[in-house]
Amino acid sequence: MYRAPRGTSDILPREQGYWSYIRQKAAAICELYSYQRIDTPTFEDAGLFVRSIGEETDIVEKEMYTLEDRSGDKLTLRPEGTASVCRAYVEHGMHTLPQPVRLYYDAAIFRYERPQAGRYREHHQFGVEALGEIDPALDAEIIDIAWQFYVNLGLDGLILNLNSIGCNVCRPAYLDTLRGYYAQHLSMLCPDCQRRLARNPLRLLDCKKASCIPLADQAPRSTDYLCGECADHFDQLERYLALLNLPFIVNHRLVRGLDYYTKTVFEIAPEGEVVAQATIGAGGRYDNLIEQLGGKPTPAIGFATGIERLVLNLKKQKRAVPEPVSPSVFIAYLGQDAKEEAIKLVSLLRRSGLSVILACGDRSLKAQLKQANSTGARQAVIIGEDEIKRGTVVLRDMDKGEQQTIQLGEVVKVLSRS
Ligand code: ATP
Ligand code: MG
Image 1 (cartoon, helix red, strand yellow):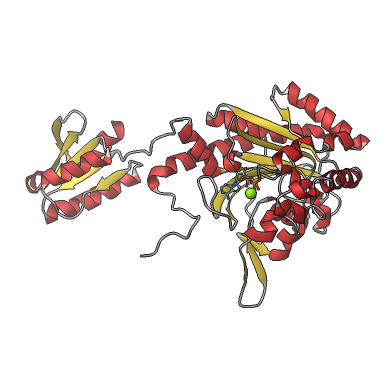
Image 2: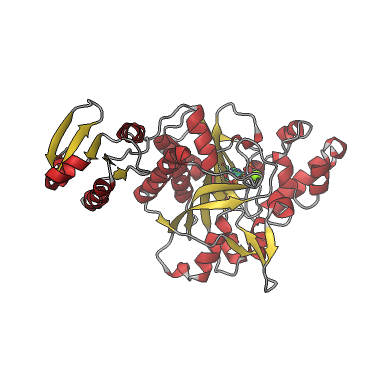
């Protein structure tokens, strides 16, 4: 027996209501804020992700699905959305468009992780990116989209964590200070953190190991080491978020797991959730990434949210989503002549815009009506041998159980009215 690969799942019809609800809300909020959809390939050159995400990150170190194709090219299944969008921005010369360019995507993401609730090897992200502008008002816009999206979905009790991790000017001195601090506590660090200290000290701040958390709490804070420009940017962002009535907490341990971030970083999670995979959405500014990928210096900011985690939270908060639509009409028949008439009628009704299910398998009338019931159709049309001769059909109201005989030629008209 084959099963879906570990960490992947089938999204069955009974689950699809959540997915279409989330996707409709995502498309609607993007229309409201004027973000346009972009779709990029499922796989890219492996180098694109190594360059952008950074060699010392979890994703590049141990989570990428990389394969060599028959021509020897190294390709990686997209482990996040931003790098591909930036590659497309550069490749298609989007810097010539009016800036910022506002884009969104909805895509499958692949990471070799240890599967558990809310953490999969294939998951889906809805993300937005605004490229070509440094104004902190744009950071506020991106955070606002994220927040309003969750509000529109009906999710409650969310916390917005915010931090600034500085830029190329101020970060080196902060990283030195951080390394100096951690060097004094080396023996208390977990093996991963000991290894990462030299090359990626920022990551020590978000280590989830119990022994590392108290050290991170006491560590020097990036916001105390910001250069003038980054400090101003962060101040203004805080003011704009207050103007937007977005409640946020400055969290000094928030750094994000990708190297490309500069200045603003943020995460949104349900209040009081302690598990590592509680975060439902996150983002930040990445002012050097496009230049690093061969474009002109282009500041940008983005956000992404995991759709599976949204489904989990909608269920947890018992949010109802629209039910699948039932067919309007079920067509039952008795005998071969009636079946042929039924096949013609079904096609006529569908062409007039009614959703119809035709009985199949030549079963008894009782069995067909049972089938009709289970589809949720409000009306059934029954075509029998005698009716065929008289050019009539029986129309049955499935809720009331009432029946009437009408002319075959009238069915489309009568049903279109009801
Ligand atoms: P985490 O800290 O939970 O590993 P992350 O920081 O790696 O998340 P991002 O790269 O910011 O996640 O991805 C954005 C969002 O995508 C996350 O907030 C989360 O909702 C979702 N997500 C990330 N990884 C997974 C996964 N393996 N399975 C399901 N959803 C995921
Ligand atoms: Mg992760």
